[in-house]
Image (tube, rainbow, N blue to C red; front, side):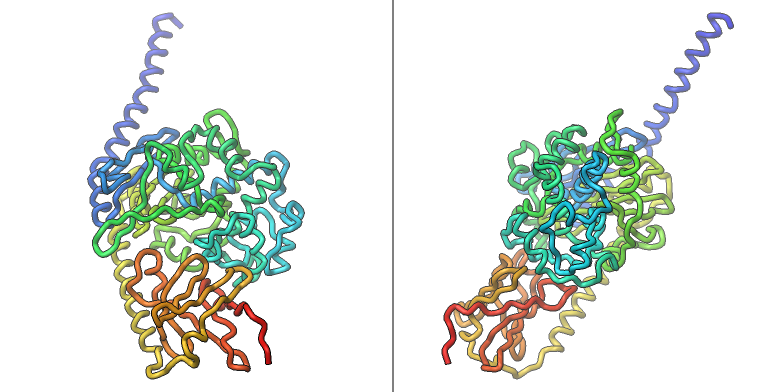
Length: 520
C-alpha cells in the first residue's frame, strides 16, 4: 500500500468520524426546535415559577438550563446550576448506597436486618423477623405511609425509628406495594449502623463527591447557604405565593437532597452507565442492573397515576426506582415532592436518553412529567402525544370528584344533633404511642385540636363528631373535612378521641392522659 493511499484512508477515517458527530448535533438541534417556547407555555398554564431541565443523550449532556425564576418575587432567573429540592428522588441515592455496601461485603441484601440492628421492631412480628434491606427499599413492609407521624411532629431520626413498633400495618408483609418513607429512613439508619458514620457523610463521600456534585446538599438549611438556590412556591386564589421550607432532615434518606439539574444529569448518566462514573466504577454492574429491574408489582393510586394510557406500561418498583415502559421502550423513573418543589428523574436505558426536570412549585406536579415526555418523544423521533391535554382532562375529573365528595359529606351529616357533653369536658391531653400527644383546648367557645405539630379548629358536625372547617390557609387547607370523634367510658367520662391521620388504617386512637387520680 502506497504512503499516499494510506494517508487518504486515514483522512477518510477521520472525516467519517466527524460527520456523525456533526450530524448528531444537527439532529439534536432539530429535535428541540420550538422546545423553549413550548416549555414556557406549559409553565404559564400550570403556574410554575421556575424549572431546571437537563437532558443526556448518548453519553452527552445536551441540555442543562433553567426556565423562569428561582426567586419569583425579585425576578431572579433559574439556570441549570440552580439548586432545587429533589424530594423522593433521594430514595435512589439511598438504594445506591446500600448497593455499594453490598459490593463491599458489609451488607447482604437478603439477610434480615434485625441481624444488623437487633433493636429493630415493627408492629408486625413477622415483618420484624424477616425484613431485609431489599424490603426496606421496595415499599413492601406492610406499612402504609403514616407520614403525619413525622411530617411536622419534630421528632429526630432515632425517635422515629423507635416508634415504628407502634405504627399499625394495613397489609400483610410483602403482600402489597405501599409507598412508604419511614422504611427508607430506616435504610439510612442501617447505613449508619454498618459504617459508623452518618447517611449524609456516606452519600457525600461515595456518590456526590465522585460524581462531582459539589453543590448538592442534604437540608433546607444548607440550600439557603448556596449562591444559586430556588425558593419554593404554591398557587392560591390566582396568586403564586412563596411556601416556607420544610425541614425533613429526620427522614433525610427518603427525601432531603437538594441538587441542580446539571448535577442530576451526571447522576442519571451514572445510572445509564450501570454504576460507572466515566472510567471509574462506583457500583457493580450487577447491583446497578438490579436497581433497574422489577422487584415489586405496583398497585394502588400511585400506579394508577403513572399508568397514563396504553403508551405507559404497567409500573413495577426496582430498588429505589420505578421500572416500566414508555411507548414500548424500557423506562426507569422516580419522582419527588416536598413543600414548594416537585421533581422528575427519568431515563430510557436502551436508548441512552435521560431527563431531569426540577420545579419550584408543589401546587401541581403535572409540568415535570409533561416536559420529560415531550423530550422523550422528540429524541425518539416519535409523533408527540398531547400529554398536556390528557392532564387537563384528569384535572377536570379530579375537580368534579372533589365537589361530589363535598356534597356527599354534607349529605351524610345528621342535622339537629348536639354534643353529648359540654365543650369543656372534651378538653385535655390524649396520647397515642406512635403519634404522640393530642391536646384539645377550648378557645373562644370553640374546640381546637393540636396533634402531630398541627393546630386546627374543629366545628361540631353531628353527635360527638367534629370536623375541620373549610377556609384554612396553607397546608391546613388540605385537612378540611377531617373528622375528629370523641368517645366516653361507662362512667360517662370522655376518655378517648380518634383522628384519621392515616387513611389506610383505622382512625388513630388517642387515650386521655389522666392528670389527676380519679376518686369515687
